[in-house]
Length: 128
Image (cartoon, rainbow, N blue to C red; front, side, top):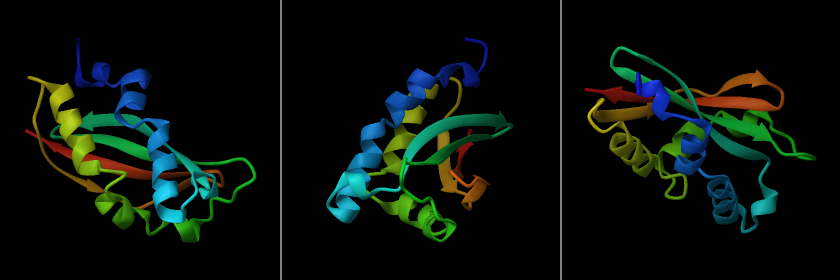
């Protein structure tokens, strides 16, 4: 393995944040997973010095509307929601990193609109 980036394959990212987590989130929120307007995908964005950046991509579901007024408040919701469980996700990433680095903290950035059907919430993980 040449770099930390090599750890974050599409398969690993999906195992860390499986599609079922978005379904469980909407089931907890609305009582029905089908009510959710988007699917959530964890993606690797890069590493710069002592920060690892991943992102939660919100992909609009067919027939639904990914309205910006619904996604701007999500960083606060996601940071503390037990189904999304970012604290647990970062702990799993810390284990995955092994001897490469140690996660010392994390925060979510503001929601960015990449396209009408794609919004992104950056997850910045501090490393030591």
